[in-house]
Length: 362
Length: 276
Image (cartoon, rainbow over the protein chains, first blue to last red):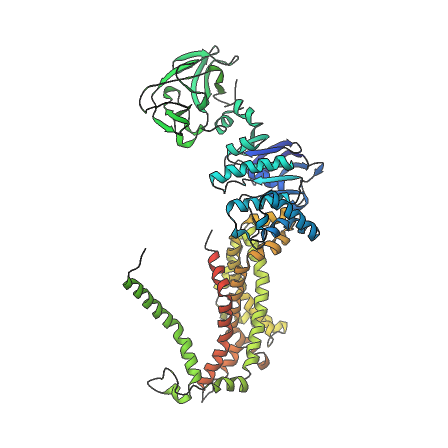
């Protein structure tokens, strides 16, 4: 096992800069998730880390070894791919032992390690099967087994759950977390799914357009997003954004004026309110809306309503939500579309972002 | 969708007609080989000889060097298949995996060689082989056939390699293989159906050649291939069509057997490129 140090790594394809000055220190045994939308550079970073793509510049250390120019096989890492990349012409046992065989390990030792890893992942009864005879979940386990059998210094995982159905994904997510706790190998995990990132990571690296937006533990990311992108990306449903004015530290929203962050100058500002911070009935700041759509999930309801004069650009939120705002109301009684509804929020729970830089100001 | 009886009957009738059209020449070749010369020339023709002349096959096998011709054809075909496959595997893999400046144009340029008629290349090839001292040698055929085969097999294999996920090689490299090791240990074993289909295509192309053999081997009887040898069986005044047909059956048989043996791979290999 070893820590990983990524120092000012960047990647250019001609004039196109797909990864900008990426620096990250990963502690020994830490589980770090790189997350971001498609094309943000997270998979490129992982491939550079694996040695499958050369970096245009920068340095990568695994433990105390500079691996920047080493071949993938010499980095002592194991990788789990999105499509599992199991060798279709080999049996499960041969797949898992392939890396050890390449390293010239004696057959008896390969067999011992493969059986031990297979037992951990409950695939020991499948060792003689070919990958095509396995289910998606079993393939996933074999891919994990191929990684752990090597006992590498670090695991790299490239969206390993995205080919599984929703139920199996949740199950396997928990299994990977448990496996990490059990064997404690430094892990770098790439996903576009913020729920995976939040539930599995010790620390999350949020990326956009090849640049790091914020590095923090999941709770900090949720509570203190550093910019509008992070605020909108983390949380499900995503944060509501509204355009409002602030004068002398007082914010006017839905006809109510209340104290906002200290030290914010007068002018236009973007206000962020998480859907779960909107409550039914009067509270600190109370306002009335007419729901345009109500979705019931049983234990909670998603109430959509128009932002009116506070409308902010739609692309800052989930596409399907359009311009609407959303309140996530737990254990609510009947709520009807078009009928007036009293909602409220706590002034201390609003997030403020600079309208120009989109950076958090409170 | 459920087919009606009429639709099913029409379908089978259509298939029977197509199969009949395709198989009739082979049947007629066989019937001609088994007929006497008188039966061959009679009108209306006989669709099955009164007394099948099985001895014609034995006669051709003993009185003509048919097995030497077949052996030469086999050597030339195996040689061109081996040479073509080695070149095509590397060329097709490179075209599939590595993006170089002008790579696409280069790939298409390779294919233009296939667009030229074989007869156009005969004269320059003859000049080259003469200066190399290869005229009359089977090596001339091996090299000439390779020039015909390689452009097409390169593209066939490129198409096949395109369907193999890159992650397989990447996984192999993370597991400790060199890029070449990943090709030999993972990509080629996975590509076996594609390789079998391509090799069979190459074999058939070489086996079926007449023009090159006629040009490069005419004065070397010991190197004649089956297709060249069979043309010498037609006399100026007398032609034993039953013997020629029997020889043709001998020549067609290896290809038919190989097709039957590799059919499973062939169909898998040719259709695999269609799915993404």
